[in-house]
Image 1 (spheres, rainbow, N blue to C red):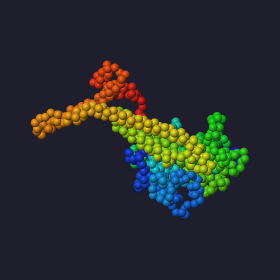
Image 2: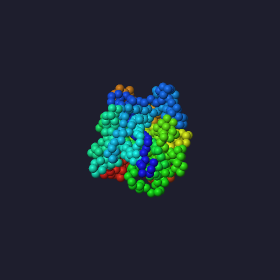
Image 3: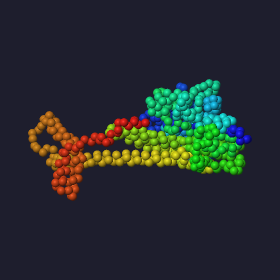
Image 4: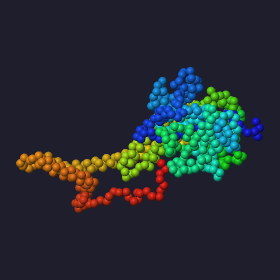
Length: 565
């Protein structure tokens, strides 16, 4: 191939992964069972539960499935596949905590490109991944095509897979988005189409709900689930967790992968703007940092230019790209090559990494919402806040013991890629930050509970001490202190009321003055104080104290914008 001929990706395959937070179906329940709610919807529901190879016929279980299974460590195998023959009947952990739903009506994606042409991508799989006890769902869409020029590949990586537009050009066209997108059915019919150009809809939705709307084609794809902040009716509601660009994995095979330049790899790995004849505006330090942190070059040696050293993997976190030689059995074979591992082992590794991040973001979102709804002056609000924080803490503990693991495989490439994915997504730092926030909240709740218990005990102690005198007197002298003629029934009732009412009033009055009385008792027991100082403390019992209302300094400024949650 001459240097003037454009590079062509002989095979292009991409997997989009879209983590979303699921909103509670029932307030107060920690385990929401969103997957069961989806399975119960029978009308206009294209999603059907997908059984894996372990729950089907033994004839459908092939060597490829076995190789995928043994890639992972035992604790990860239990997470991905469950254990025992009962994995299809129970959903608690110990069995498989993952339920997968698939739809088959969308067969192609038709994209309108910048040059006015259209590009069809075949849909291999379109799945929803639900996880037991975690309010997160991940949409996974696998697409593929053959013989795409490198410029078209760069355009797809940059423009395709956006939940909503970030801006619009002067002519009203959505910037940095694909011109048009259509879901194509089995008969060639258009099932849904993008509306990126409808600027008024996105602006109004953001103004009304203070959150971004998603494209109409994505709404169609996720139905019967509906966006949380919308007027659409639906029991299963979701909301965005991250950036509007969907995480993606891309597999590319070239006749000569060594023909790709240094800038080509940066454009592919960072899914940045296509090459239009202008060099990247990055300095040498940025390029070196990218190669150091995002490039996996274990099997990439350009100086040799041999087939066994022609595979390069780039993982920035949100994007993962695998580049290798077309026609090489170890790379392009769909059953035994890296293409098979890309679609199965490495997809699952990426799914775990993004599931970890989505779960942590979901729990941080719950904490923020709990704090934003707290009214410190309202007792019911404080109780709701405590319940919300404690539920989030329990969910975090279960997540840690069920799903959080720092190692998934002992195979060198799988192990290194998971470490790179986790590091570049910042999962470890996010986990430590969330853990510290939850511990701070827990310490605050424990200190607040201890303070309230101490105040209660103090008041009860004061009441007991001052009631001790009456108890001793009545116990020593007896109830019949004065002899008298036998009383009538009305007289007996009156005597009971005459004793009960003053006693109750005295008890409540003692409670009211309990703080001042406790200070007086402390002063009496303090030998360093003079009699005059003790007498002043005694007189302060009946001194009027200021009302404990919210100080003006504690009131929030009225010109602050409302919370975003």
